[in-house]
Image (tube, rainbow, N blue to C red):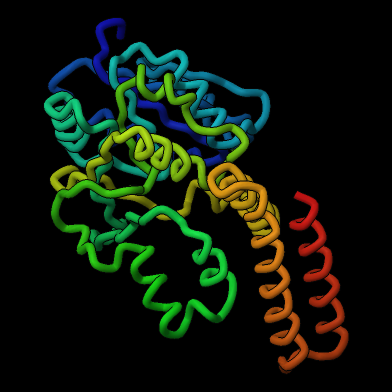
Length: 308
């Protein structure tokens, strides 16, 4: 609609049934103000785009011939958005009635805040504690090795994952989950949107960090609830491909935010991770042939990560 105040961009790649539930939830949510829904389909092979055309005629559809991944496809939707406000919404979410209106009202009333994100819940209603502090140089070490399992590493991991925040009340946070994220469209575009080099992972972290550096605040709004099938929108990637892309995006994120020396640090951590994996394989109970196969796979994966 031409008088839309809020543009909701939903990205989908082979998530037809999740997308259907997402769009149904948006239809059940009668907005107080004008809203448009834009679906960006990343070359799905499961009939997602055809479903949108046939069953959701009021939805704007962008059909990509191939998978352009998360960052660039969301930016595509943002560039054609007509609303003054923009909500990036994963296809594995279902908004609860009134959630987007509450988020929009907060941002309208608080010009000092650049973005707002809702409380996320699992399908069974339990809370997702998904807010984070910005990654430090210690985080990759603690995430990739057993040092993060025991004090003091486990204490630092708890702090990084905002274990001190119950996620049941509203507050400003450094980095909320990107499953549902609302900004002013003009500010999103002025920031350059999501960094395309962070194609699938760390792009929301990078955007939040850029906003923080400009003194812009981000609100976690517990009064707005969105159900989230956690990880479902990325689960369709093959595990090896997803892990490799995660490692490459992480390297790019750290290079952009901590300089090129961080690449050496990450390379050292990769070596420690591979050493731990090697020891677990050799000391395991698998047959010798299975161990040789697993070790060869580990070496190949490490080479691929190092070449990123």
